[in-house]
Amino acid sequence: MTKEPQPGPEQDTSPAQNKVSAEWQDRLRVVLNRTLPGSNPLVLDILGHQFQLPSLKGGCATKECILISATILFAQRGYSAVTIRDIARVNGVKPSALYNHFASKEALLEAALEHLMKLYFLYVERLERAISQAENFEEVVATLFYEPKRMSNHFGIYGFTLVNLGQLYNPLAAKAKYSMLNHSINYVKEKFDDCVAKGWVKPFDTFWAGALIVNTIFTGWANKVLEFEGLPIVYRTGDMIAALELFILAAARSES
Image 1 (tube, rainbow, N blue to C red):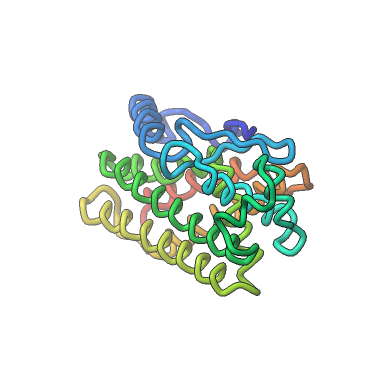
Image 2 (image 1 turned 90 degrees about the horizontal axis):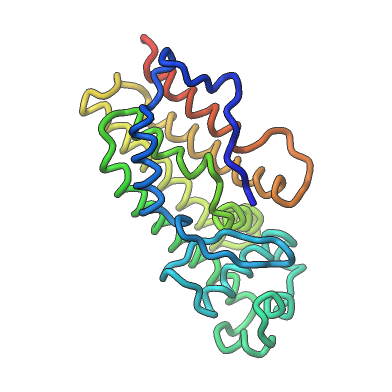
């Protein structure tokens, strides 16, 4: 399972860093654990790995489990290397049972991408509830970076890897990547614009700040798959995301 990122020297907790208060950190943990996928995660065993996964309905019906496991297998091995028999085996059902839900492997891929987008917008909906309780810029930033630093949503990192792999040959994968990137950047920009309008922080280029955050997080997801699969990595994703959070806070507070 993923581990909580360990603070490095650059993550000093001294008052001089003007970090988010301990009280807010505790409140943030409670709020996000209540509102974001992963607080009471479904755990699914796929080929010996234990995955923490979000669920649309608080449990995993057969069809949803098939979509989740197919997404992870497609991302791990590549779409062409995965068979219906492989997906049936990890779900403990006969291959014929999958055809009760999906007409073909192609239809299963399309449904997996659609399911990924549903979970993405569910995440944003719950994230919005948490951000609405923030009382300053630091709390907004802490909320935005909470889950990316933890990387506890394994389905998200494998789902985005599938989108990345599939975007060159599958129009739906390309559309899914564009939608997630475009929506995420504009969402962060909107939250930062609100902070500027409230006088919580000086005006800054909120679009490029959002683009930097979102692209770093999405790149970090792909790197996290390598880490989780035991492949060589250049950096730990949690460390990179935590460093970016400090950079954004420092840049926003700096004099223009």
